[in-house]
Image (cartoon, rainbow, N blue to C red):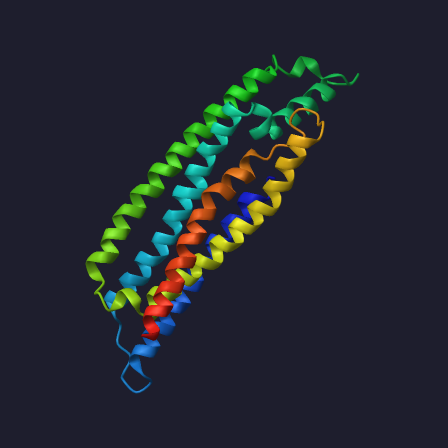
Length: 231
């Protein structure tokens, strides 16, 4: 499922212009159409904080935690559960080496399958820990930065609701995409007799497990803010 991460990356890239446009709408609504336009540095800072908060959630959860969970699945269930691409690459190399015209003299000693898997595990651990630490650091700094400049009234205003709605849309799509890809693949892995690595749901299932509670958070917060705004 190599297409999953590009799709998710595109969704988060879409969040940036959505939040910026939402911030512009917020500023125009504050001006009321009759007040001369004045640059509000404070409002711009709030837009900045919300954009980076959304990106940092994605880095921490999707880039970091889901990658570490994928490693965990590989250790608990089996490496073929998480590293199907490694098995496919190994099979392809084996088939290529069996060709009569394969230039073996140009190639060094190939890695064995266990070596490839070990290399993939270590790479995922490094990537997962790095993304989790970077995302968490950004999340903590910008969460408290936003709270520092934001008043109690602003915590329920239009800009806040736009941020929550953008997060809701993004993580709804991420959750649906990963669930619809991961659950059937997991069932095929469990119920069908497949060649090792042919069905490898570890990555998509990890993303779904991580994204689901974040989606629920944005859903509950969006509903709660909307209900509070009506009273």
